[in-house]
Amino acid sequence: MRGAATFSPTCKILLTGKNGQVGWELQRTLACLGEVVAVDRQGLDISSADAIRALIREVKPQLIVNPAAYTAVDKAEGEPELAQAVNGVAPGIMAEEAKRLGALLVHYSTDYVFDGNQATPYVEDDAPNPRNVYGRTKLAGEEAVRTVGGAHLILRTSWVYGARGRNFLLTILRLAQERPELKIVADQFGAPTWSRFIAETTLQILSQRLGSWNELGGTYHAVASGKTSWHGFASAILQGAGLTTPLLPITTAEYPLPAARPQNSVLSNEKLHRDFGAVMPDWRTGLACCLDGAREAAVYTTFHHQR
Image (tube, rainbow, N blue to C red; front, side, top):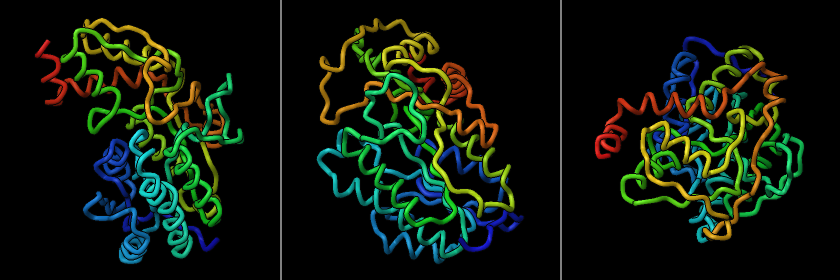
């Protein structure tokens, strides 16, 4: 690796996917560390290797943070080439450019790199075996970053939600207003993770290692503590929002989708805690905080007053 990148008052941070759930939080969280150059789809065609190289060479960042991804899990089954370009190829291009600059790359991955057949929480060294195109392309992105060998952090997270964008939380709030009852899968388990927790944990790691980015290089799980099913998550959402729409548990077989999902995608945060002292709160804590903040947002207010 080249010399260590360090934060300074003029530190430049290139952030992709600024309008996504995690990107939106990161843009605000990372602002205390330097100048954040944040781009969306209009500012960067992440499916284009040439566009990625051109932007990085123009900005010359000391830190590249890449939450941008092709996240439409079912749609990816019909668009594997595009999903691979965004999730599998782009991270490797960023890693190459980061290494050339002596910069650090922070890249986000997913619990869906695992098949879900394991009964216990997955640790970083467990063998990946993705069950769908989305998971396979995200794993390809991880492998591309590791192959380059520059300074990098890969943070795997799961069941990401927030008060903006498209996610399970907002879908449940909307459907609870539109339908007399909801049927939700109860035999898939994971850890719903608030996007703000992910951004804050990223900041905690980066703040600890000022001046020693060249020593960073690894994959970590960064998810909320605890676990639940999609049905359990939906139930907590309705309860927290004060909604009384009946909620019926169903099996995965009763709700077939184009992309297969892992039955158990609970991840262990032990390595994250051991190396950085980071403790991510319980998923219920994150949900309560998210809903408290969302009560002031127009989208939540609309849902709440239509009851």
